Image 1 (cartoon, rainbow, N blue to C red):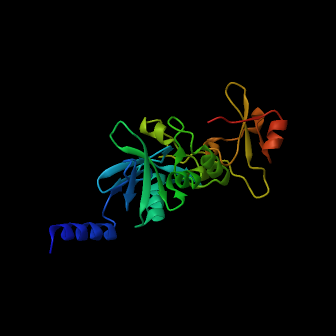
Image 2 (tube, rainbow, N blue to C red):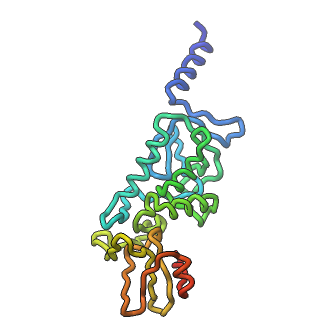
Length: 232
C-alpha cells in the first residue's frame, strides 16, 4: 500500500470526524467544527477566532433580569454552543486583533453567526470597531431579548471595572397590569428623559411624582409632553 494512499486516507478520516481545519486557497477562510470558548470566541483546531463586530458578556459577567442576577456571559456561550452543535462552520477573516486572534465573520450554512448572537440579545454590536450589526441590536432591544430583558453592563465597561452593584438588588418600580410602563425621569440637570422597558437602565430608574416625574403609555405621549428618549 503506497504512502500517498495512506496519507489520503488519513486526511479523509480527519475530515469525516470534523477534526480537520481547512483554509481556502485565498487563505482568508477557515472551515471546520469549532469549540466555543465564550460568547464571541471560537477555537478551530487551535486557531482562536474572535467574532467580528460583536461583543458578548464576559464568562464571569452577571446581568439583572426581573430583580435577580443572571449569568449572562455563561448564557451567551451556551447559546452559541447550542446553535453550532457539532456542525461545520465557515469563517471569513476580516483582521487580526492585538492578541493574535483571527477576527472573522462566521457562518453556519446561510446563518451569520455573529449577527444571530446580536439579534438574540446574547451579544452587542461592537460599535468601536464596526457598525455591521447595529440593526440586529436594535431588533433585540425592541423585543427585549437576552440581556435586553433587564439591566446589564456593556462588556467593554465591565472589563474596565465599571459595573452595576449586582451584589444588591437594584430598586425596581412596580408596574401593575394596565399601568403605563414608560418612565418619565427628570435628571439632576433638570432634563426630562424617558426610559422604555427595553432600556438597559430601566430597572434602576425610580419615579418620584413629587418631583414632576411621571409614567407614560407610549413614546409618542412622552415626546408630546416634552420628554426625550434616554441616551446610552
